[in-house]
Length: 255
Image (cartoon, rainbow, N blue to C red):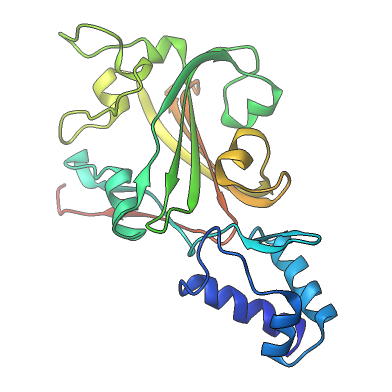
């Protein structure tokens, strides 16, 4: 088999669950025997897969799978007249198998830096940061989500609310049915935009996904902007490069 054919065969095996997240692959000698090729060809194939963020290769140790099945990212379901908004968590769990889960939310107050400017929030702005990691049904980390909310927006509370503002609490936030979190809190958000790029995973995202620094990943930035263009919040989702990204808009026949 050629290098490309070996990459395809091993990737298919990962997709089908023959090799799961954390599994050690057979040795290059064993793979060479299995695919009827040289160890050098197998080693080159594994190097390509390492660059794709599928395996991690260590000299004298072998290759370990660091990816799960291709995860699916649902950016949301939108219905006319905002009659119903399906939570992204529900849609995500449905698409990534029974047993998929979301890690606990970490909440902190920080100041944006130059690396955050693609969120639309300028550097030097006080924000509340909410971060969490999602795992597929096999336990593979497949999304790292980091939401930055300006302090002005994060300290808003619904009418009659007592206690810590919802965006400053690590608890799950569930607005009343038919409302987005931004509308419920009165953030004044009138437009949500999405930007999907391919970039290197670094810092907390790389660590959360168990990927070596600079592994190519998808970076999805969603921004909630007010009428004057000011961004009230932005969410940065980092995910393995071969993830699929989708969202849908439904017309319920409401004029």
